[in-house]
Amino acid sequence: MKVIYHSKRTKRSVYLKDNGVVVKTGIQAIGSQEADIQRRAHAIGIAPKVFTANKDSIEMEFVGGWSLNEYLKMPGIDKPRIVRLVKIAENTLYDNCISHGDFTGDNIRITPDGRVVIIDYGSAKLTGEPVLPRLRHHYNFT
Figure 1 (cartoon, rainbow, N blue to C red):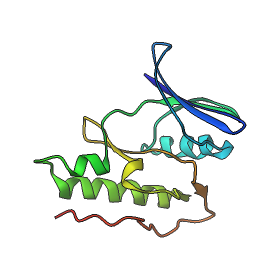
Figure 2: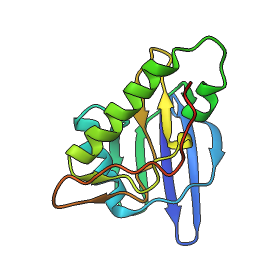
Figure 3: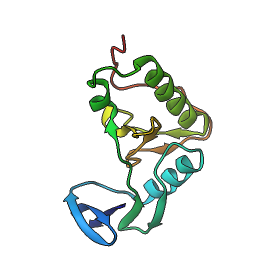
Figure 4: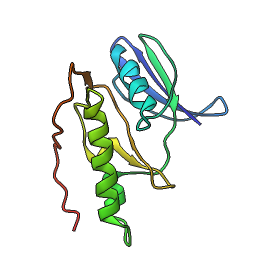
C-alpha cells in the first residue's frame, strides 16, 4: 500500500492507494523540502520510505498501526518501553540535524510490530548541528 500526497495550487490532497486503486482521500499540505528531509530520516530508520517526489506530490510507504495518542489509550501496553522508543526516535532525529517542527502524538506512529515511525515532515528543517529536542505535548506515561 502507498500514500500519495498531491498539491495543486491551493488544493492539497492525500490518496491512499492499494495496488493502484485509490481507497481513501483526505487533505494534507506538502512542501518541496519535505521529501528530502523524510528521505534522510528514512535512511536512519525512523520515517516512511519516499518512492517518488516532485514539487507537487510525494509518493511514500503507508505506515499501519496507531498514532501515539491512540496507542497510549490502549489497555495493557508497555508504556515505559514506548516512552523509551519515542525518546530514541526523537533523539535520533536531532542527532542527525533534523528539527521535526511538529513532533506530536499524532505524528508518531506505533506499527503493529512495535516500531516507532515519525511521519509528516512538512514543518521539518535541517539544522547545521544537532539540536536539543523539545516535545510540544507532555504525556503522563505512568
